[in-house]
Amino acid sequence: MKLVIKKRKKYSGSLGGDIAIFIMLAILGAFMLFPIYLSVIQSIKPPEEFFLFPPRLYVINPTSQNFVELFEATATMWIPFSRYLFNSIFVTVVVTGVQVIIASMAAYVLAKVKVPGIKVFNKIIEVSLLFTSTVTHIMVYMVMAQLGMIDTYFAITLPFIATPLSIFFMRQFMGQLPDSVIEAAHMDGAGHFRTCWQVVMPNVKPAWITLIIFAFTAAWQITGWSFIFNEALKPLPTVLQQIQLSGIARAGVGAAATVFLMTPPMVLFLFCQSNVLETMAHSGLKE
Image 1 (cartoon, one colour):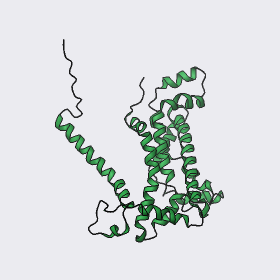
Image 2 (cartoon, one colour):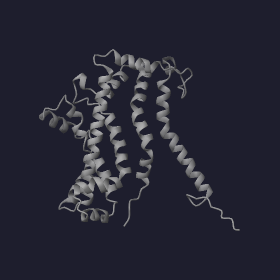
Image 3 (cartoon, one colour):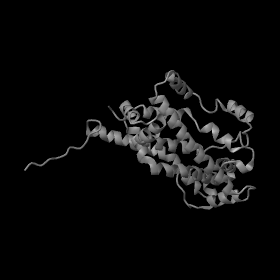
Image 4 (tube, one colour):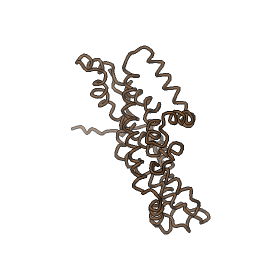
């Protein structure tokens, strides 16, 4: 009877190389986790520990007073905290949902529909990736003002529901699907709309779940400083930023606000991380 011994999979061809890779990844992981750790530590520090020298990367007497003061500060405002929270949830859900729908349909056309001029549109999308939202801020404001959308929910939802990055991301992933899958759907009588949602989208599930995470994170941080002046329409990040800018006496409250804002995206990522990893590692279906 022969014993079959499985050899350990080597990533770099040698044990020393594997150890070096894991050490490097551990250092990078610690480097990326450090800002999160520091934010949490700062949020539970009492005021007297903020002024210690040299600064300490740990807390001696942890306290929840910063979070208590954060909610007390929002409770004394003219507009209830629940209103700010509703504004952020509403804007985040609308922007995330509509952005995924628009990006998916646009990406399907750019990747799988053979129409004249499609290469030009693809190039326009690629070039637009070079420009940040800051470059187009004045133009967006002028358009919103001409349409009478300043101080409305449209001003903080419409400019964000279609982004070049989301379209480019979905197009790259859909482009990996074999054309034979699309042709088979058309032979069965499915139109482009049905093919997109019933054939293509289930096959690129990791991609659009990853897009949901990216869109949610960006939408949750929308402030609307330049478009929203009505206090009742301001999203939560705007109010929390005002509290953070209150001065060094409220440094702990500002750290608590930071932790409060970063918690929802982190929770969403933890639930969907398997799909994100699959998106990054997936090489697409082959003929």
